[in-house]
Length: 394
Length: 103
Image (cartoon, rainbow over all chains, first blue to last red; front, top):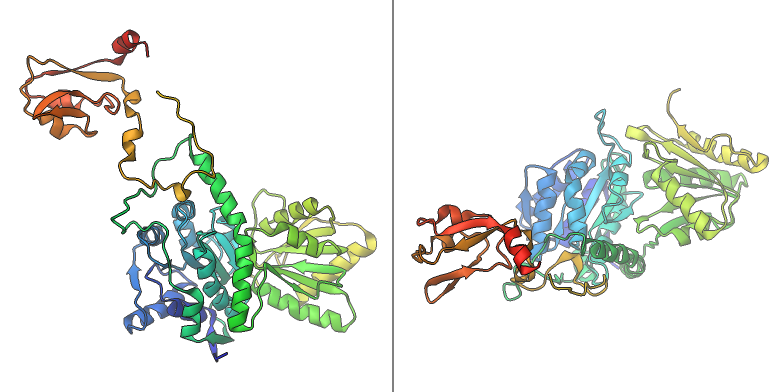
């Protein structure tokens, strides 16, 4: 297994994955903190090391529209965005998914305006969670690179054929330099294989219609298909992960369990904050505390039974959300988890902690405090406040 | 309108695709019509202006002669009547015919 170990940013790792995938078309518009990703890739295009048609469009609405057109034509298509750019794509996200176009799009998580903020939270992709895209969250640059490569296989699988978003945290991961192991170009190309479009518009021998009017008589049936197809992507995601391990020696599942098996209390958190939480778990484990962590990787489709089972033996859990579902009962992760645990039938005591909005830092001390609070809940059997805000000034 | 068995979600192409060309022919857009074009054969000169202007290809032609309208697809927009240089086409209330035809 030949690998190249380098020190690069998350955006550089993602653009390197783009280079190795060598898509037919990339249509993108720059937005902080995604800008560097496409900028790096544009150098690969300019240097002629990829065959990609890079379409520099006038907005994200146009970027996703061009991606839909190129994918319908029969191309392997990618783009990338963040926050307000994703919001501007919103209309076309649903069209990409409902037209079953396997577009792969890294989203570098950033807070949605307003007020205007360029730093990390998950309000952008959580707002797009019901667009019909598969959503995969990455903790660090290595995972971002690995997930983008796997996303191509997942999206293009004949049983799936759906677009995939791969998330990593803005600035924290996109601009932070980390050690990343890169695979050989040829290994990546063999892994993703040749793209076989189902119904390319450019096949003039077989004329067909994309995006027709679909009223009360058939729209519902098409939505029912979509619900089934994204549900059925779960085993494919696991198969692709298994094959990816063979080329990378790195293991991926629907979520990651960290010291969870014998834990009494645990934190559930997405992306880069899980890295900080792991350091706290290590520290508390050294002191003999039975603490653990569950880091969801695949948020759509949500693996509710697997996750509820993995958490069922715990006494108390804290679900950390880096976004707010305004007016809802807790954040998006919390509502999914509560619902899953009800279905499984065993419900550990639980709290929801909203944190890190607009790039507000979460440090080890904050996470230590969450585990201490879980200890108190276990001791007293009482939850003082179900939904809390961590790190906000009163 | 004929009663067609509507297919279930497992039976239809995915992604809302229509896998054959020209399938709009199967759509009875004539049911949208509130006014119907009626031709006066005495006035018609078969100049084909109506055929050129009709946005729904609903002017029926045989051997170079205008022979009538495709009422299954004509939406009753009235462009043919407006453009006819000899005023040979009149737009009449659809209700007159529906009562007669028992629709």
